Image (cartoon, rainbow, N blue to C red; front, side, top):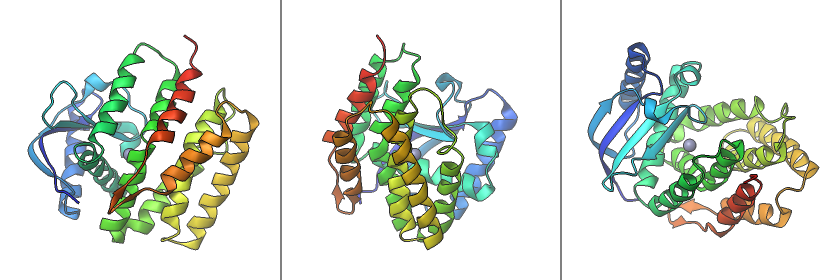
Length: 265
Ligand SMILES: [Zn+2]
């Protein structure tokens, strides 16, 4: 695996509060003491990332598009981040750094292609845009978690327990519109969890399979996305390996386009 370098990394909360910023900085230092970093950083700047507004999830990593050199950002949702244990916070930062390693390396084009279509939808407030991006970025998520499990094996069980906890809180209670699309994204995540849990514990594996089954039922309630394309994408994701790096994204494109096609113009 190539060892990339990032010229400049900005990291901080999506708020303007210096207390939040100090908290993220402390978490970063704990993280950097605990783990060998997956990527080299040149300049590092702790600052508030308010330009990004809200982010989906606990943290997000992205390339700064305006600059073709490798300037990157990790934005942290302070409320969700601090609701987690110190150890979960450290693993979250590790996960985001692994994203940056792939985004600046083998998955750079896939990342930039995602940004390109996302720009076209920037004026839409439909939640389907972020769900479509969720489908697009599954490739990144699978790569990041497989890499984390392989290169930081001592964290495997803890990481799977954390991801199962997140899935427990979201899979079974969803009754809103487009729940089948959300169920699809959750199912793709659970497929990954089943794969990770197979190397972790039988208890986690059973729970991941149970949640995946619940998602399959939710998905079967509405047929918004052709099931053949869903199955092809699931299969494509299940074949991903990163050493050697092997992935295909044809079905990713198709499923993303189906979701975007549901947005009223
Ligand atoms: Zn991620």
